Length: 487
Ligand SMILES: [Zn+2]
Image 1: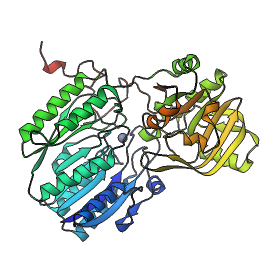
Image 2 (image 1 turned 90 degrees about the vertical axis):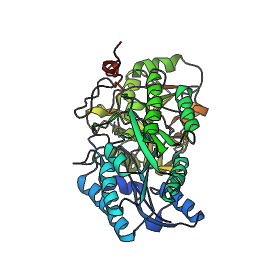
Image 3 (image 1 turned 180 degrees about the vertical axis):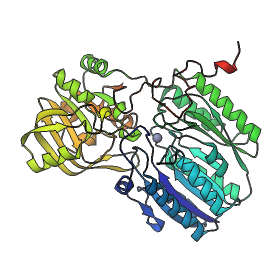
Image 4 (image 1 turned 90 degrees about the horizontal axis):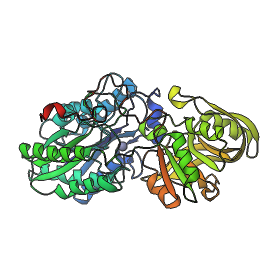
């Protein structure tokens, strides 16, 4: 068979003031054709290429581009990348199968549903015979346009996203089988009318993921996904959706999606991480068990499009005169430059963070000592090394900040140790991340606490100022199904 692959992905926080332009995609490294690599933007294209090669199929890789989450993608940038993929499909086709890695929550200026737009146009180019398979991040909005244009959609099941390659392999098999005429995938979704975040490593979420997996391969169910939605994307149809793919049985797809959706809605109070106010988290950290207390600043997670330079926690730590506290990573290229110019050991007045708008808080002015510098700070990320660019470790009266040049969230303790800062010497480590930090930090933390903000991703899901989305969702509405279930 002839197989086409492409990747175009970013998670768009429509409330973010940071435009996603070429630099956002170039920072990750745009890959094309035979240039796709296992750890680059085209990582899943590479996986599909290897699987196809092993089975004797012919593969053509198109563009692979991925940008760190931020605001809407600049219109000309999106259209240019979209058209490159479409041109490749036209030029290199025909294809039996097209496999795309998209995010599912990408919006550009003039496009609320980039994935639906791209897939609709790709369908027009490839024709109705080609099987189009799509893998989405689970923080996605599954839209009617995507469902209409694609044959099969699979989302990640795990948050943290440790299963992208496993889902890619499933999508590959599903689409090859369909192209061979062995199956006929049909899809249906069910809207759970929920907005929240749902980490999957433990508890009821882990059980729900296991139940979905147990259903797959039974009763004609080819695949089952839970799209968690992305709370800070103000687009139509946002929110949690179950997506079922069955073998030719549309009624079955609807029934399974609804059954799992109703079950998930029933679990709503058990599958979320409520989080604490900043002061409540600091209070608990001071009185908690001995050792290192890790506090996650969920509201400034760059992985959700937050700036990564908010100062709300830093300010309270300084105001409360806390010691042996470190905060990382804090995005401030200007401060990094000043520290590199000043050199290790220098003492200087430094204005830190708070540069991206009200959601970042005000800058904090501290007299700091430069304790360490790096020309290329690296931490262990989910799928390989995660690059933070030039970095500086500064300290002011027992408060340590790791300043970085690239907007990234915290993944691993080597974020600190690679700068020379020993976590064993600290009482509190504040990390900017929502869930992806957990696997790395759990082994070194005596306790993990999370805060809700303030910040760009302030977790009051009852009050996100949506203008486009339907507001009939939990927790904004106690029971969004009430009108349909007369007592
Ligand atoms: Zn995600």
